[in-house]
Length: 215
Image 1: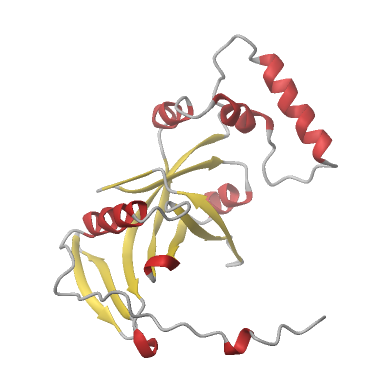
Image 2 (image 1 turned 135 degrees about the vertical axis):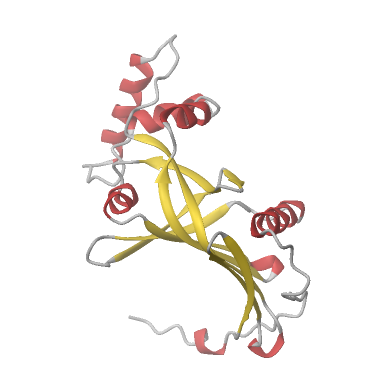
């Protein structure tokens, strides 16, 4: 394998902004909303993209990027196939972590917590807001299972199109939403000399403590 010679020499000093535990909002969800809005205002690509890490009962981890679709005082919401690898792992072990990486703002946001399923009605409400092609894709795809080739997947999609031609697409019961209820939320702002600012909110007896972490 050819060595990538310049990896060890890659350097970038972060100097654009600061983060102070005395100045962040007392409510971590409002602080999340503020950073998300700033990422959107900066017109970053996929500002709601977050890496979701899960693990099975043996502690073997798995990570992938999903899209945040809602955030409020109850937590962070995303949608997927419940029969996917992440769905199976969350069924075994509901603890998860998500990370947003907004490189252009030199920021990261990490949220740890417990994941629960949305109600069927909550999932249906979002499902029917999706583009029809996305609805059909959710019906057609046996997510995270081995398939022989692309033609097989395209055939499943055509079957779904024919099944629901002229009809409302029914949400499959194996598809829906999850809510990550946070127990810890860390805001990371890049700083010079790798002495980054890290402010963490820790849930303690129903209240959020705000602390600074060493980089």
